[in-house]
Length: 174
Image (cartoon, rainbow, N blue to C red; front, side, top):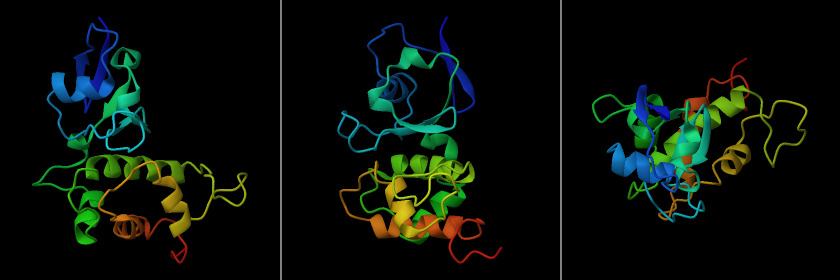
């Protein structure tokens, strides 16, 4: 039997090889936090974290994730116990309607790991050195997640707050 670990619990994958990861999470596992936006990989509302890396769940077939560890917004925090990222989004009003927020937060969590791992981005000046955490760098890294309400500056402010003590952040104390 094919299985994947979702939010710390093993689940059998669907037998239908055409079932997307998004539909399996939402419909079969009753994890509605992962949103179906465009269903074409263009908006990022369906972003989840698979084996530590962010991905659009609408573009991936569930059966391809045998043995993978999948993290959805439901594992990052809850209404009664918000994560640091979620608190920062609330503090900085990093959402308006909230539809894109689960994908934004999953993407932001993975972004923090990418920065810690020293991954360069399209706006990195030199791909051979660990990039500094700047507004431009954060905007580029979050560009795969659209917000139709336009809360981008608030999302960046939330990320800056969470990353303020990160040694790569401009102005962070060394």
